[in-house]
Length: 387
Image (tube, rainbow, N blue to C red):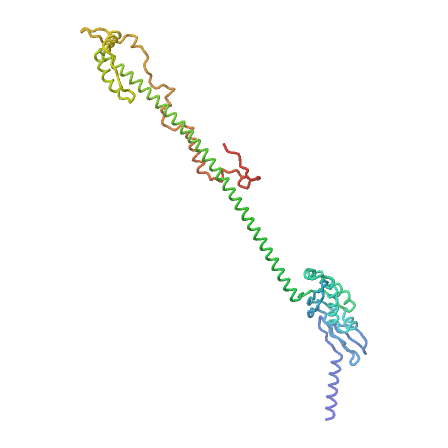
């Protein structure tokens, strides 16, 4: 029984010795080893053998980059406003021996150093500068912390200000100021919009007036051209009508005299025709009284004797002479006036009509010069009239 107890004690001692002599240090950690209370070495990521009851692991240090967030701290600015600022520090242990022997608690040391440095930096700035200079504050904090923590075996990678909270009264004033600024920008934008709308409306009215004036101008030109062509055609028609009327009267007179000559009228027949013509001559409003001369019959006899010759019955009848037969007669239509009676359209008129139809089918915008459509350089400047 005693032997079993002794054997158990020996086994326990062996297990304790083995546990004290072997240490497993994982990767990304460093173990600081002391021998009889004095630093011996630093091991990381390996199996380490120790002398039992002589060597011991003083501390294990995490070699990864660590993120530490500190509670908000009151900081007074240059314009005597108290701000609540909380920071975040990114650091890494680069020398485990210094982190263990140079300072007792490097995390607390980093926190206090961050707070004091933050107060020094922000104390020289106003509220507006503090709110708009985060990058500058972060850079100054990182520089100071990295220099101070280097002897502790630390490397400060980044320092960030997580939030900057002004006092509630200042926040309310800032909100009012921001609201006023937004309302100001909204008013400016609204005014700019009205201005642009007025400019566009005026520009549209200007272009509309220009197009209307150009259209009225083209309409007036076409109306004048149409009136001109109409007057020319009416004048040509009246000329042809008068010519035809004169030619008809000439033909009628020729036929009448030819009939008279052929009929060999006597003084009695001329007197009869004269008496039939008198009522027609008296139909005028200005012809009130007609007197027939008493020697009218003698005058007809003298006229018949002068122009006629006595027949077998002793009555004087008209006999045309040889010279009367050779007198010129009214000519028919000559080549000079042949074109007056053509009914087809004059080529010039036809071209004018086609041009008017083409203008009517053309959009009005194409009739205005390009520089007017894009806006005239000077107000009220109009393009030169097109021929």
